[in-house]
Image 1: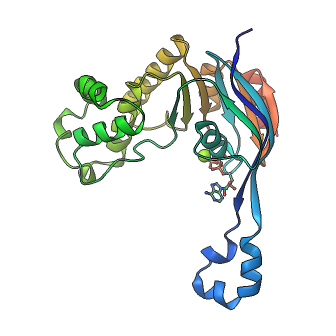
Image 2: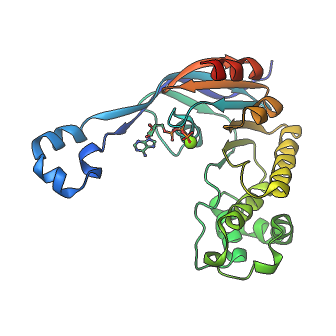
Length: 244
Ligand SMILES: Nc1ncnc2c1ncn2[C@@H]1O[C@H](COP(=O)(O)OP(=O)(O)OP(=O)(O)O)[C@@H](O)[C@H]1O
Ligand SMILES: [Mg+2]
């Protein structure tokens, strides 16, 4: 049995409840006493979550919109802190949570590669050394010195994935990013992920494609209404999710 590298133990995550604030300032002021009370309330996005992912394992996470999957990855990435419970991570985490997060619209594609690579933990030297490979993977040579604001959204995500594809991750957290780009690029992304997997990179893969989860993952987990409903063999978990 391989050693666990991600351990969630009794993790609960709440967010503040913004009911009156998001309804606008006027509503907030009109209902001041109640609104102030409301802001103290919280919303539970994940409740008592316990699971382990072993080194080299590909672990799928499925569930409805709003179930808490991205929150789970945010916690694993250390971007969010749990209200209760503990999270242990052994290894360097590369979160692929939002492709192109941290890109700047006025900078060129090339400049954004450097910015994003450094934000994701690569040294500037390594990004520069890998530059041609990253641009080649993105197939955006023609546009690479244009400002990012002139790119289509698909082009931005391609650039985002291309940076990621040249990281050297130990633990990869993937949130719904394999469905980006056109068919050809999706295949390239999938091959890259398969390559990481073959090289023993530990992966947590959030996906709405049950087919993808069954093809790629060693085990899967179904989160429903902020709680774990099933953990185990991907086909069985996906079937439970579809049935439930
Ligand atoms: N920053 C936030 N502040 C308040 N509530 C939030 C915040 N982020 C998420 N939530 C709430 O937490 C719950 C879980 O959200 P999360 O993004 O983890 O869902 P998800 O399973 O990733 O959904 P999807 O499949 O749509 O991506 C949702 O009800 C959402 O409204
Ligand atoms: Mg999500």
